[in-house]
Length: 145
Image 1 (cartoon, one colour):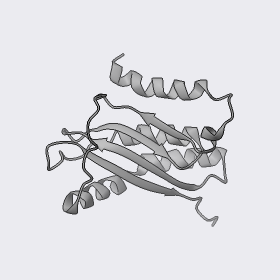
Image 2 (spheres, one colour):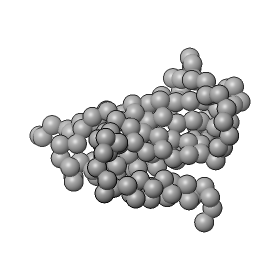
Image 3 (tube, rainbow, N blue to C red):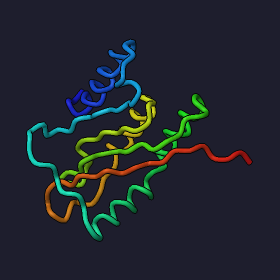
Image 4 (cartoon, rainbow, N blue to C red):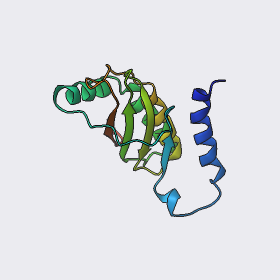
């Protein structure tokens, strides 16, 4: 198994290890999955103009796995709702190289959404470097018909 595959598993298991300790951190769940580049450097720029629009369109067009994450969790927790903010970097190749999410205290939803975001593949950034993205997803149950 490659180190790339192990990183999400390690993050998941490190979160699970503290599951029996109720504290303030559990009230506001978050998950961090580190990318392959652990060096300290300045934050990547935020996309602007057409590049920003294209990235937003891509996320909306490819959000089916995100909706499926929510619908699965909704079956187990029917009142689950709120805004989950994903933050991730797009690397020079267009692949997501790190991802976090916070805002809803449901660990399984966060793990599922972060995993889906890490599978996104964008066009290469115009700058040739990395881009920093923060994208909110608003989750609310659909009204009964």
